[in-house]
Image (tube, helix red, strand yellow):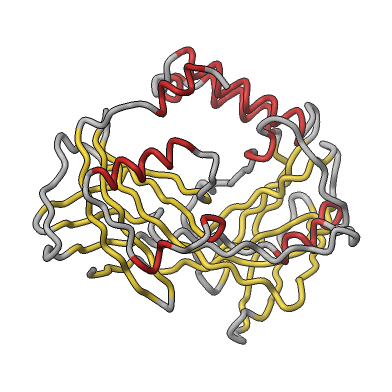
Length: 335
């Protein structure tokens, strides 16, 4: 531990606002603690958290087994785009969420400061184990002072759209051929037959793409030179671990009769066992953006990158459609 770390913990807020409002929905409880103001305003919400089922440590899991078992972590309030407290509109500008930890003194200090400001821990929350709770922190945009609040004020929350994961009961196996289209059909979770058309299969030189992006003037204008160096360093470290220079990813442009996002994986990857990567390699994910909005069959055109490294002379790639993501609508909540 260093004293410089303690300096961050001992910070004083310019302002602090207690809200202390509990929300009950779908058999779960959430609690809006309040807001703080420093250089920017932040709003804090406690959410329930259930650990994923523990695996049998003696049983080796392939990537296929791991992906099927993974649950989509849902932060109910992390992607809210707007809060309205009384007549005051608060627009969010991103945020973060994570499990409460006993050793996180910044969170402990936040709770103590809130209590000093008048926050009373609700009865239902007092005996909850921290291992079963998440703290969501939302940054509020362009706010110079915290709003006024009384316990009888209505709170309206605008939830942004999200995505729900649906694992296919039986994964769809396809052999992709570079440069050639292919059509196929699968059964959705609700029994609907979905027709899909892969219009274009291509090799992507991710190293060349990264070079073009980092040399783009408009991109560079968004960051300081120090930030750019850090971003490039992390990205190239991840590339070296995920896709060695000279190797390529497979890009897919597709359209479907249903508005969904397909998740393809190479069979080679799915049959393998997870490896431990050092550094920031786990963040490297590619999403392909097509040049056109509509495909050759008149349906919305989408892109996906199979982020497994392949030789640049690859012609065929066996893949599986393991699951798909379906968009959920934006909605409003009155508290």
